[in-house]
Amino acid sequence: MNYSTPNLCDEYFELIDVLEPMMTSYGGRDSFGGEIVTIKCYEDNSLVKENAGKSGHGKVLIVDGGGSLRRALLGDLIAGDACRNGWEGMIIYGCVRDVDALVTMDLGIQAIGNIPVKTEKRGIGDLNIPITFGGVTFSPGAYVYADNNGIIVSSTPLSSSATE
Image 1 (tube, one colour):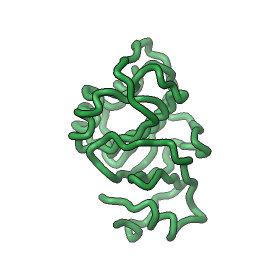
Image 2 (image 1 turned 120 degrees about the vertical axis):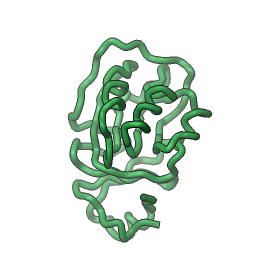
Image 3 (image 1 turned 90 degrees about the horizontal axis):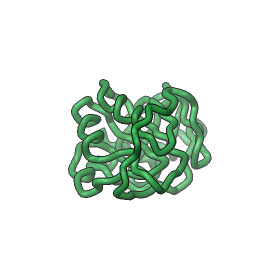
Image 4 (image 1 turned 180 degrees about the vertical axis):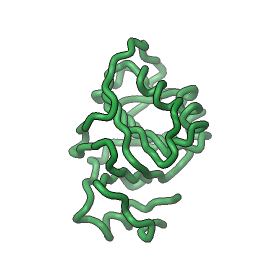
């Protein structure tokens, strides 16, 4: 489904929070949305890899990487797993890599930057806890909508009448 965050803002402004403008789109989907699943990790994408391998139909993975610009939390292999498992998208407060491959995938991906360096897998991180960055708290079970205009969060699903 295609979402228009300007339309959603116009219709539901009192029900949403808007992420500060900090993300760049890297995926093949220009817009995406769904139920939030969260991961908090720092320069270790073990939980990202593990969860991309699980069913993600109707869900968006929000990864709080602490804003690190030193290691990529997502690359083509993990993104490929996410595509095969039906994830709608990923929002990464950190970096991605393999950007030429990511743009060809049917997956929404937004991140603060890109770098070619992979992470070490130490199995460190937290799953499904509230995380905050860019002036917004992402709570597991809430909803997120993203397009090239921005990212918005709502505690409840928003009607598709405000789509493009």
